[in-house]
Image (cartoon, rainbow, N blue to C red):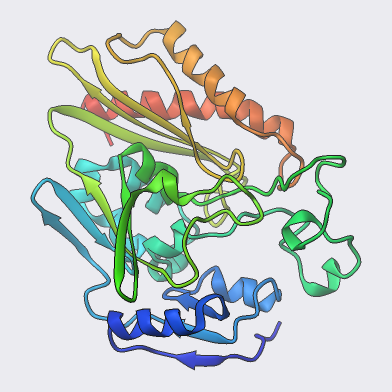
Length: 329
């Protein structure tokens, strides 16, 4: 498929990029790796007037320790994140998630920000214009129905990014910049929960950095995902877990996040703090994750099966974090 026509811009600095984004706003598509953007443009799901390549802007890639935080540039490749000793040590779930994204070739091109800022997906939406022309317009295309769940009153498309759930479990924040302003928000606040417009990033903003806290004491995190093939595929169910222990081996802090279970990653409320991990507690968290997930038939596996597997992969993520606490990765 051919790309639609567009003007091409390659700003030399972040200030220039922010100015261009402010001028063109929604008409400008920002890309660095382009692994998702090019596909959506070929399918005519997006037809920007301007494509702005920020890949070569100095200072927007790489990892850096700053006091009690790790700062990751938006353009940092998933390959670099997966191979970083610092990320493996301080945020193992993030390294695992990056390692499990797509193929090695794509991981070398794909960026941190690009993986976070993915659109939601649905088999009734992610199709060519020829296919979509034969379907009634769904909510995500400006219509008034959901083709995946007839009679529903909203869009049930699914957010399938790998990195965001892992970053959320590890307490990640994002820095959003525009000409004349900067804001830093918890990553979970970037998601609206609305499948039609899933991201709360303004049309004149660019995601420039991700910030991770450096936890202390005994801690570990893990990420697990369900997919059909061993590489390439988006997650069909995913879970990330961060666990910190007290000196007497009680749970001091726990943060569980599920992905590919709705239009945004979802934080699982739980009562693990102050307890030891037993089967009853593990099952309770898995049940809560199940209750937060949506099982709609709009991806490559049946929705009911994907939802059942939320329990399984939530347990695997939690147990993976405990295993990492004992010295494994």
